[in-house]
Length: 224
Image 1: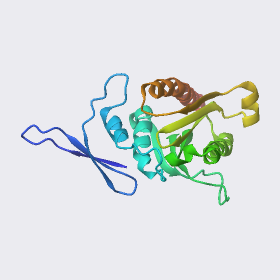
Image 2: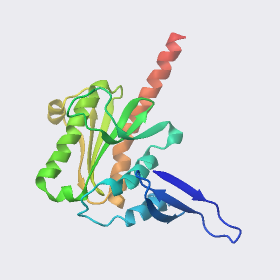
Image 3: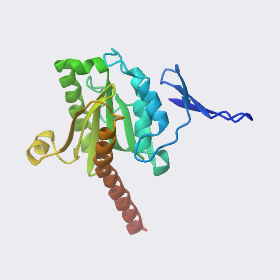
Image 4: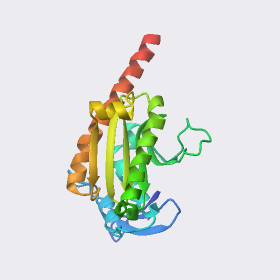
């Protein structure tokens, strides 16, 4: 995704942004965001407003929206990197080594994994279950190599989403017996309830990142 800022002219016209999806297609001109307190910036809201097909057969048109949402919660200025089509580096040439739609990394450590499917998949119980199963398998593949205390996985179908995070040291069976933090399917990721739930949900994940960074600093100081 590329955001191209067009400078305001001498006539005082507002700044606009050209939004291009991962294939380079222009989605349109979007007004400059004003980032109202407690809500997503206008840019995210306006991109989301263009995505109204709840039965769309393809997920690609939703990639920009989700990348913007991830950048809102995990900005580059805080040291995070968002990687599209992230290949799990530990699976080699295995047949089930599907690329993750987006991964949020702290240096090389995976923080959050997001798998996006088509909105139409949500309306079929089998494809919905397949999406949830894929998210669980992605966690199982990545968790043994994750140095953080917690790893988060989001499964999205258009603007609908579900998520879980748990200790990277627990298997799925152990997590179910001990309990895990899970969000049931939410209707619209940009709604106020979704925003508030994500804010609380991701605060645990970001606290795990802060603890990991602090431990790394202490290790370096101990070596000097």
